[in-house]
Image 1: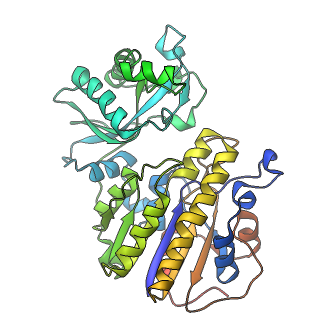
Image 2: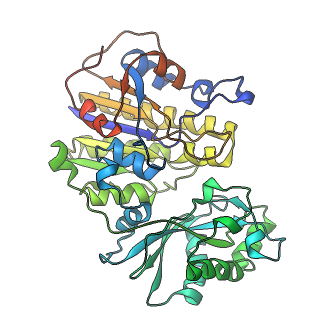
Image 3: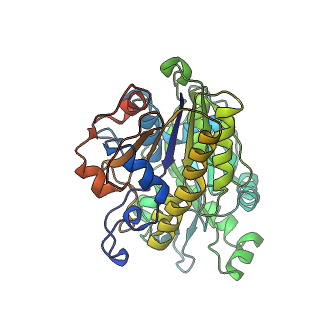
Length: 404
């Protein structure tokens, strides 16, 4: 038996007026997910432990079977694992987003944050901008590391784990009250704006009507994580297919294989089919037992507040990831169990994460069911099936049967 989790990051939502009162998942045309639901099981799962902030870090740990209450030490340290930073026990890692701030105001604290991703800036352009920041601001105490797209890293030697605002939580707001209390971090953020605002790459982006990556934003502080081996935990040899450093870092920490896919960038126009083929190949040609396919696009479109693009991302997920994986495994003659779910909701109306329950779909190629339901939030809640602890989901996937 092969096992697959397809994770549509932030895919769950609330009813959207412009979608005729439906959620993006209800509105989207998802024939593959709906057919799997009719032949499988749907329900809801609580992925974010009560009292913890809703985020892809805690939620994906939970879905992979790691209780965030026990294993979570901060978001950025997981990304540091992916980038290959060997953190000392006294190091603190911080996420360093390249964000778009308004440029009209003279006072830095009066600026507003327009875009947490700088228009999904390319990794190549972002690396050039981060190098400019690094040249001016890096010291023995503060060291910068380039990641993917807008997502980068700051290591603070002998640092302090402090609470910092997530940029996607304060979109459109004046940043003053959300800037770090630590004087040096705040100064570096302000200086990064001075370095980047007139950088040639940003001047060219503005000419093209693109959002400039004109400031660093620090958040997600934490210390070096310690995860147990996924194979020792589950008995399954596992692999991760994802474009984002957070998920790749979780995989590194869990001693899972990380699969590189050319053109996978975490955006709306990522290489969906390449991810699907990579998943099939790792299961059928490399003899892995389990693959986790993470797609970031629905979450990014939720943060952008675009219902149209979120629907598009979900349809791409259905037609270019889930369907080809199913077809590839069937063609190879493999028996398999596939679970599809979001990690958390990212509602269009608030453009950030919530900790509400999310819908799951479970399909077993050897035990086809016969239902009339489709895969979406409303019908999953009506099913009456619920898993109260997300970290128990992995055991349910590899268990012996359905709830009904």
